[in-house]
Image: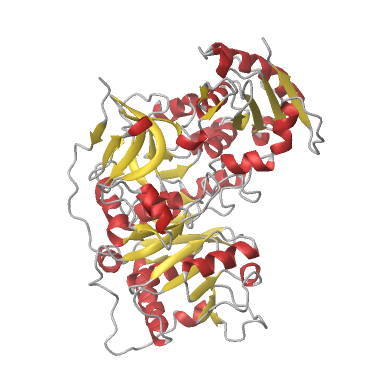
Length: 573
């Protein structure tokens, strides 16, 4: 009989009450240790805990002097940087609520989110952000991390003014903040196309860190090479707070995760002991590391404790390379609404496809109707802000959170099947789980970054395939990437060898109706900019379907024009 309930064998203990107390504790415990470092003149320079804590107090005092009060919200519209880190903690530790958003949002979107969030303050990175801020917003004050002037905002305050010494009688950070007070409003990445504002509390965030003590041993000697954006839960809560809470050093990766060679150059400088990333980046780094023994020794250096992957499983062959060198590979699962982690894999247990581990301490999981995964625990959000209709939908009568993910319980933990709303019916009413097919396709070819399967209301499914162009252009020996791989060096040759891989995939699918009959290799990529990827590089299916609508029609043989180069791969039996 299938299990329908799962909880951690560990008990959740000793959760700090709020962010202010965590910062005070760390300022005393790690006073001479570095919090955060950025690259300047090709060298990493940073800020120590002693100065970091002083600055947070000064920022909070300046904010209070201009009228910022408990419960108020401040939006942060910036890329990851030292100033952003200090501003966000100052807001949270003084009783406020920080609202981080993607640094490159379109003008209409950032203003829409600002209004929806009911913020009255906003921090911008610099010129590229302030140019997108409307002048008719209900703004009490706007701040800039860069020193700039803007005629639309004559009262603009520079960040350097906020860290100047100030005395405010009777001031202290909010050390008595209730653990259930909201301190972070985070907009979901919207993998299905709709963003919602998630309200997270001090206890949501800090209970995660108390739970992680069973998973790893991080301390002030650890180094994170970090690029994941802080407006998103994977980088902004999971990775960042894991480092901050334990006094580990964060080194900002100077290409923000976009240039594998630059990441590897920074890797040489930092020698990270922990790395949090997504499979696509691991694949690119691994390809570079294979080019010579020096690069390989640098990448798999002896101080590297573990690597963490999310958004999708790490390919087995790459995972094996870490494991045979004694580097643990960990995977997890969760949502922004669950702060974000619900499960972690045990690196000492053999990995199984699709299995994302067991619940962390304090978290309970159950399977409901149609095997939807539901969560109960201290990590579950307070609710969506200003969205009663959605709150009614996502919470059960007995208080469990409906994740929208379909899964099953196995011996090694939860196995993810698909998003409920991604499962579609063919014309003959047979159900197809597209994510299963996508995983199978990607498992056959490392030269693909993403696969998208569609077929709702059609006779058969088709696939759009998006190439890993950096791997195709690599001059290294990639035979290790896939056993017996033809190692294509251009898209046309990739399209030819993909036919064989796709036919093998089809042969593994028992249900003939679910087999791919046609695929298109597209000379284009998914990206955050065209809204087909989330900040953590997850595919956004609804957006992909919209952006590549004509490509899908073309794959079904309809007469439409496609501007990009493409290759049709017929797989009819």
